[in-house]
Length: 287
Image (tube, rainbow, N blue to C red; front, top):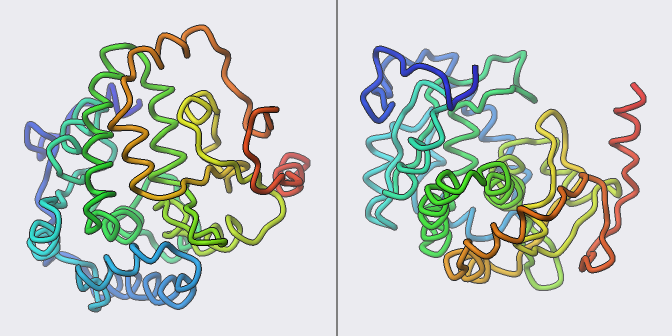
């Protein structure tokens, strides 16, 4: 059963929020957070967008242990007016968009186990908080996330959620950003993953293509492995301008008559930064 049809757990409020219940975390769970944090903190400098590292400092996320959402939200609220709220897992799309539109970021409260350290299907507190929350301390990115929530409400009304979800996937989760002549990571799905933090910048396999709104919304993606495409934005200011400043009604009108783009496709009009070999995906497919 997917998030759109799952019943609300009895313990959850009407907006699907639940207490984080920070005091119930065990020493082993805090140790898992610290292990994951230390690994990413040692590897990300020079690879991640500077705004991400700034957010770690502003929010004081280098303190040991799983962050207390109440304390984290207090610091985040002072920075950009956002807060972090706990949910039992994936929430319905309309609930998700409403939280974003009101500057609330929903986060799972469980943390992965040692056998899941490099991969798990459902996002845990490390992915949600370490991966997403530091950039919410950046005013421009914080505004983009709110604009995305508002746009999601329109996408639901138009029946265009699959296309709109691709924008989140290829920016918030798996986006790259220019930093002078270099590329840097900013998507939460990358920065919370040790393996993909290396793969996304260094491996010759994936395509790296300049961001184009309609192109992104037509492009399929995969959820079970490293990405075959990464889209590169010029800046958070440009990303915000291209989304919050866009009338999506004519975009959706155009998309309704256009086919989806397969994951590994390069179009003649693409601004290609790196044409990937796709070798990694082919190896995986071959078993």
